Length: 544
Image (tube, rainbow, N blue to C red; front, side, top):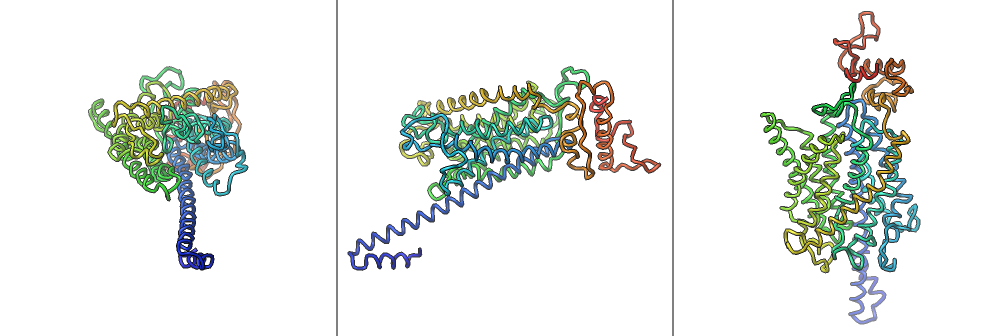
C-alpha cells in the first residue's frame, strides 16, 4: 500500500479520533509494509544465493572433467549430476527433517537433541520456508560432490550413488543439526552452550567441507589408487617416483575454478540468510572471501615455485597449483568470513596455500590417490578454517551476528580467552569422528560386495566406454560390451576387449589426424611403434 493509501486508510478508521491515534495507525501500517518488503527482499536474496550455490555443481563438473583423462570424462560428469539428483530426493525425504526438524528451541521444551524428528518429506513446512530448504539442499549437494573428484576414474556408479544418498540424507544432516539447527549440542543458542560460545562456523568450513573431505579420504584409502599411480602395472612393485596422471583439459579446470569462485559469493554472503537485517555482514563476507581466494592462489603458486626451484634449479609455474590454492583460500575463509577483519582474511588465505601444498605432497608420500586434490583443498583447508575462527574472530563481528551477549573473541585478541578456540576443536573432532564412524564400515561393505571399485579392465580402457558405450569426444557410437573378469581375461586376449581397443584406437587415430590404409580399410589402428592409438604401452600389455 502506498503512503497516500495508508494515510487515507487510517483517516477512514480514525478520522474522528485524536491525532495521536491517527499517527499510531500510520506508524503501524508503515512498519507492517516495511516488514513485508523486507521479507520479500530476503526471499529473493535467498533464492539468488541458492541458485549460486547450486551452480557450484557446474563448477565441480568442469573442474573434475578437466582433471581426469579423456577416457573418463562422461563418467565423472554423470557422478556430479547424480549428486544433484540423489541429493535433492534424499534431502527432501529425510535429510531436512534430520537437520532442522524440531529446531525451535523454546517450542522443543529447551531440550538438546541429536537428530531432527519433524518435517519428513517437508510435511508441515510453511510455504515461505521452502526457500530455506532449497538453500540447505544446495549445501548438502556441495558436501557430497567433493568425493566425486577424489574417486574419479575408478569408482563404480552404483557404489557412488549409494554413497551420495547416504551422505545427503543422513551423515551431513546430523552434522548440521548438531551445529546450525539451534537445538544441537554444539549450537550457541542453547541454554548452556559449549564453553559459553558453541561451535561457530558461519558458512561451513567444517560442516560442509570437512564432512565431505573426511568421506573423501576414507573412500580413497579403501578404494585404492588408480592403476599405475604408485605401483608398476605389470610387476606390482612400488614406483620410485609416483606417476603423475595429468588431466586432459586445463581450460576446463580454469573454467570450473572461476565458476566456483563466482558461486562462493552465494555460499558465504548468502549464509546471512537475510540481507534486510544483516546486509553489512554479507558485505564483510563477500570482501573477505575475495581476499582469501586471491591470497591462497598467490601463496600456493609462489611456494611451489620456490620449492621446485630449490629441488631442480629451474622455476616452474604450475597452473593447477594456483587454481587449487584459490579454492583452498575459499574453503578456509568460509567458516570465518563474517567474523574476521580484512587483514586476517589475507593471512588465512596465505596459510591455506601452505596447508594445501603440504597436504598434497604429504598425500603423495602416503600413496593416497586423489584425482583432483579435493582432500587437501576441502578437508585440510576446511580444518584450517575452523581453527582460524578461534584465532581471528573479532568480538564486534561476533556480536553483530549473535548479539551483545556473545562475550568471547579469537585468541590473537585475548590470549587468556581460549573458549572459542576450544569449542572449535571439539566441534572439529566431532565432525571427523561422526563421519569416520559411519562411512568407514559403509565403504568397507561396498568394497566387500564388489560394488565400489571398477573392474581393472574397465579402468584400463576407460569408464566412458565401459559404462556409457562411447567416448565423450567420439561421435561414433561404441556398443556396450560385457567384460569377463580380470582373473579370467588375464593371460589371453579377450575378443570383446580387443574390439573396444580397436574402436578406441580408431577414434584416437582420427582425432590425431590419422588416415586409412592404402587399401581404404579402417584396420590400421597402430602407430609407428606398433601400439594402438590412444592406448598406452602399459594398458596394452595389461590387456593381453
